Length: 483
Image (cartoon, rainbow, N blue to C red; front, side):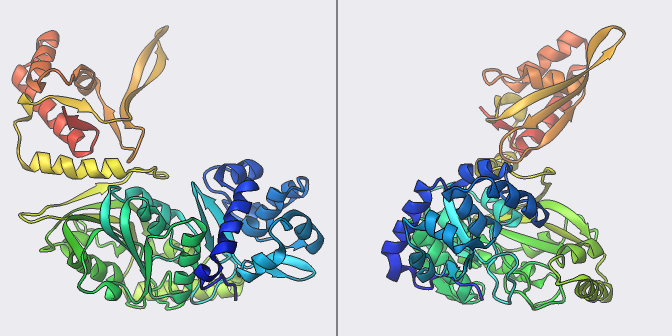
């Protein structure tokens, strides 16, 4: 069983020495990416391992040895480990539960830089019921969709390796991190010590039980939301059946939110073709405004295949796939939806909105998510938008695609793009492009639209109506803000 020091405080001095050693070795996100010649993901796929191994074999440096051990999970000869890790001594790594030292040296954990943080987790090949997963795409999505603002108390429910708690700790005075998995809490505590974070409190327990009766100013949750017939992995399977874990958690979260507090939770649900989507019903009477941010729909069989790719071999994979497919058939599940729900507790008449997230990898979107809520507050107040002034949010740009026709370059497509946050893309025709390019923060919308109507000889009433509708949509998406 892989391990990590369960009581890092007792070895705090060695943990600090470890962090200094790794920093001196260039073991950070930029250094590892440069060494592996990789992009955003430090190791995209296990099929890349032989490529990386050959590349590192030709670069016998301390950093290469650290990457082989902790990122690739490769064993290295004891002589090379002694040579490159001696400044800290192998016994210190062993005492911290990071290395198994014999004729060869093998890492017992995966240790990967993520921006400014170093995060330890179980190796991806070492699967056990209480497996502690590394930072994957849902983790990054949750981090990007969390509203970041200074708060007094924050909660990370289902902390896993602790990365969400460490991110919260940068802008919360006190963070409570909970998990039913004791090994996850050990990893999270180690990661907090490794990153010099001392304002996180770790509590064992299921879902919200460890914080019963408490309130928080910000909550994040990455529960075991996979719809599966299994109870195999704590981080993946809730054992509740169907999509009940997502529903029950969304219904319970408002109870731990202080007034005006935000919560972001990763969810999945059974696609029944409802409009609005079924999770909207989970929020009825919650006392929260909410955005359901839909990231994708997956055929049930494709979902079964995706979650069982770690099978021990072809026979095991086939047996697992058949079991999952039978479960989906018996439960009448044809497709599954994935996404996040961002909620804000607020007294008064609440609203729920649904948005499709842009395809592709998300970027940090805290400010954009906050704008979505501010935009709804503005629009619910039913302002007379024609009398208002508007400006574009940071990072919004206009893209035009030209094509060659009749010996001239002509505009073929015009798109309004959010280059930061939620990267919405809004296609514009000739008329809407004219409105977008004419908007000015020092001119009321009515004045802008009236001028356009006069310039093109169009019906003023029609231009005012179309322009007001376009502006409302751009405000709703957080691309345009009241000036």
